[in-house]
Image 1 (tube, rainbow, N blue to C red):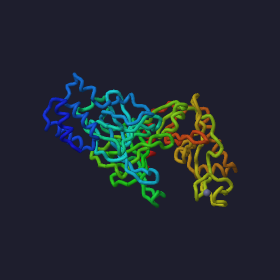
Image 2 (image 1 turned 60 degrees about the horizontal axis):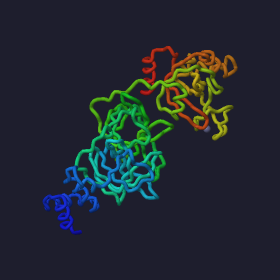
Image 3 (image 1 turned 90 degrees about the vertical axis):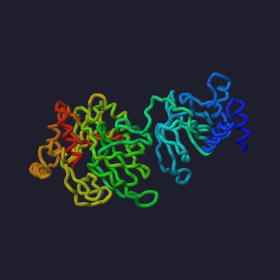
Length: 425
Ligand SMILES: [Zn+2]
């Protein structure tokens, strides 16, 4: 291409030095900016904004005017976040960059199908970007025909540049985020992945705003129980209705010498609101025990699969030697909604006032296992309790796996201590 010719044309139109126009043009062309767009950028740089030259600028659309159905748009934006992820696309493995752009009018998410080299904080002119719908919102698609050049001036935005986030602010769909957390629980597991057996880590991360489950798909050494770390470039997915943090091969995990303080409280919500949210990893409710259901008290589990069994018969494993256990399935009602609370052995012992041996003795004396559940019914039904746990919703209804359970008028701080004691075991 004859850069000289175009530089001369620009120089005479703008009344500037030809060498200067040529240098500007060449630097833009280095960024693979299409020629016409490069020329427009040079015109913009040398126009005072008070004359006809303004009309020659490419039409940068404000982000709040971008809608699905538009195509090949040009935007002038600030990069808020950049996340990297490997995905399967039409049978191929592909590394993509994704995150959010902002300008004065709003923000928009983007997916870049190649590495344009921009970072959070950069101000860019993005030309010829596609628009598609993603999670009900327009999203910019940056592909082979898209041009990316540095903007002449920093783009103003009220949005926060960079991905640093408190856990409470994370939502499914967030990408390129950075968190500083304490690792409350972590477990190494082997899963059957796309490429055969893969080791992953899963557990619970916390900061002073919330606790969330996480998966580390490429186990990082610094993710260890009790440790505090900064994790850059995580993405958020929905897991049983609650946000879940995903750490990948592209995430950077840096141990922190100062421990990150973990919150000891959960948001308190009416049951209807909690159920409407689709599931919550850590929630506190105040509700009445309406009923203690069958299958509570002294129960037997299959030693193979842990399912509750009756008459030493497991549905999957046939005749088995059942193992004794204690649990409560209670219906909670706060006037807005009902959920089934599932209370494990440890808390059930506390509520019952005795362990498995005591329960078995009571059952022998009465020649009826049901006496254990009856004792629990007498203690719980009709009273109001403050219950904290993990709420999941499935086709059978809403289940609250209980971590802490106490009278509604009990001091919440004592509740918190009980939960943390449970967590640290
Ligand atoms: Zn079984």
